[in-house]
Amino acid sequence: MPDIGKKVPSLKGVLHDGSTLALADFRGQAVVVYFYPKDNTPGCTNEAHGFRDLYKQFRKAGCEIVGVSRDSSASHAKFRDKHALPFPLVADTDETWCNAFGVLGEKTLYGRKFVGVIRSTFLVDAEGTLVEEWRNVRVPGHAAAVLERATRL
Image (tube, rainbow, N blue to C red):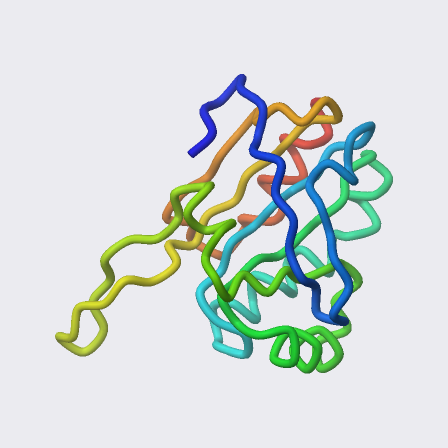
């Protein structure tokens, strides 16, 4: 798990369209990496809409957005198309990204305990250094808060 002020791991992942993305591809620009539990669930959809709706402002601030969950590329492709998401989605089916960023944790749903993705967001600067993190994210207003911080890089 990267610490604030330290370089993020050099990770690669498969995208919604089957192509490959590496975090190193973003050197020279800032990137928001946000982790969410599951495609097409209410909270995750609202979070994606928040980033989608502010995407042009993130790009104007020199910042790209990457969404990550454990869903498959096929699931991501449907989710991305259905909600007109302009940013890439990493299919972290082997949990490499989740483990590297320390976003897996115990959750409880209807009394059943399981290990799931804890909604988290990371802001990485143009040099690949982690500058901010948000854990246990509450969706309302989150994308705007991340944008506000990104504009101060």
